[in-house]
Length: 133
Image (tube, rainbow, N blue to C red):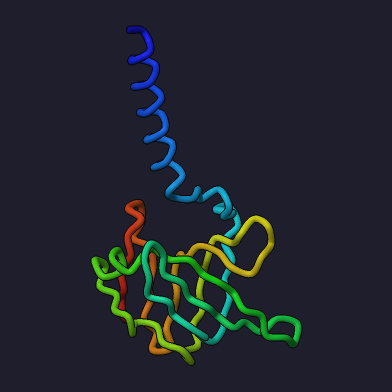
């Protein structure tokens, strides 16, 4: 029967397209124009598939909330992070790949904590490390 190969191909195509939609593209971030902002941590959401830093940044005399995307908690643990690595009230300076649409936020690249500790991407591997001064 000639219908079986068509049905099998359709099932395989559907399965592959579902997994491809499970994760977003990084095209929404502007990798060519990193931005550095300083602000006070409102919240550090230790979650999967992505963790988030909600940062309150003063611009033009107003406080604006920035949403900074990080890898998920599982990946951060493998890099030595803990849920309390960043805590509400900390003043941090962070460099991000900003959102292309101009919304306040972006993809985490590095941050300097109040004690001088740098949290950053390890060159070329897309992994995180922390280093103290």
